[in-house]
Image 1: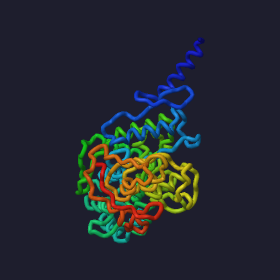
Image 2: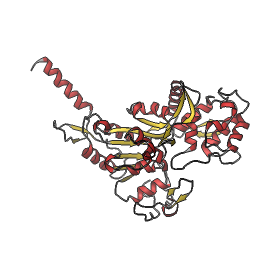
Image 3: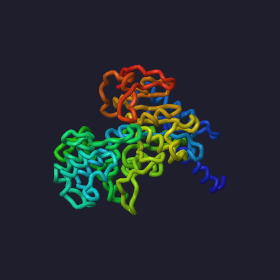
Image 4: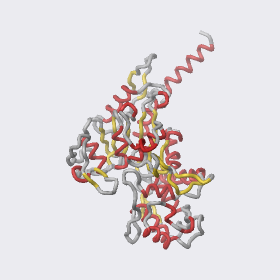
Amino acid sequence: MTPLALRALAAAAMLVLAGCSAGHHPDAGAQGATCRTLAADPGWYGDNRERIDEMIGRLGTCGSSGSVADGAHLALFDWDNTMVRNDIGNATFFWMIRNSKVRQPAAGNWSNTSQYLTPPAAAALAAACGDLAAPGQPLPTGANTGCADELVSVYTNRETRSGEIAFAGFNRRRIEPADAWAAQLLAGWTDAEITEFATAARQQNLDAAENAEQTVGTTRQTGWVRYYPQMRDLVGTLQANGFDVRIISASAEPLVRVWAAEVGIPPDRIMGIRTEHDGEVLTARLAECGGEPSIPFNEGKRCRVHEQVLGVEGPAAFQQLPEQRRQVFAAGDSDGDATFTTDATALRLIINRNQIELMCRAYANTDGRWLVNPMFINPLPVSPPYPCATQGFDDPAGGQVPLRRPDGSVVPDQQDRVH
């Protein structure tokens, strides 16, 4: 054999090894290669790992490009409390408050930061923060606890410190206004600066001990985040088997890009909250999806996937696609993940965080494709029965109504069985 042929053979062997590891299933490819499967781990509940491996072996193609443009199957993951324990949007928001990185809004008018902020909330923020910095300049929230506490209350409690509702006038199935507001408060900074903020917040939260808290203003808040090794392994296994793996998150997109890099998901496969630019700096204007302001939350996640990945534009992006065009796998943990996980056609992995609508759907398991797994770190205790028959569906106007099956029948209340 010539040296050139030997080099070609070695290169081919390296390509096979790159997508394969110990613990394999036979690949259907012509070369008979074996491809990566999920590592055995006690964090997987019941037969969840085996069922995911079966799906990967049945639908995957070892060593393929992993692009829907080339016919790869799509696998979608929420980020916060699905890929990691705790919330990177929270982590960055708290870091910005502690480090005085939130800017005074234009004209000192807090209504400019969100179209959903109520007049009482805007007035409370103006009273607490109004004379601390000129418009467009950073507020001294690291030192001024009054301003910091009002910002924290509006964000975390969705109400002012005096108890008045902070957000109104939104479609509950397409907007989570506090998550949107956290992204909108990045206004005035460049993408590069926000990347620096997210990187610093990430390091702080990874360095902190598990269960650590931090002081933000005068409040005590969660101060740590951890990657789930099981989910990192799942992403890598899907990628090695030719799936197109993407993140769809209700945290700001620049933040998710920073965190997802370590899991091997490139920036062009990250979907998070987007706001429009004014030159190089971000503004508080939410990007649109389906012809309206929307964030990747519940039906907004479906819209974003359809527009960005599958090329469906306009109001039709909010509608469910035929089965052959949808993602085969989805993973999530919250009611904001109910729509895009339901759309998955092969398996839906739900991390149990005691969210009513999502857990009602998962435990009802009308088509046998739902998998429930406890949180991999500090799993939550058993929940009281989920009131699916009366409160199982989040109405767009804000109430809760019965969850119904596709045939219109009501889903009965469900016991919390996996915790």
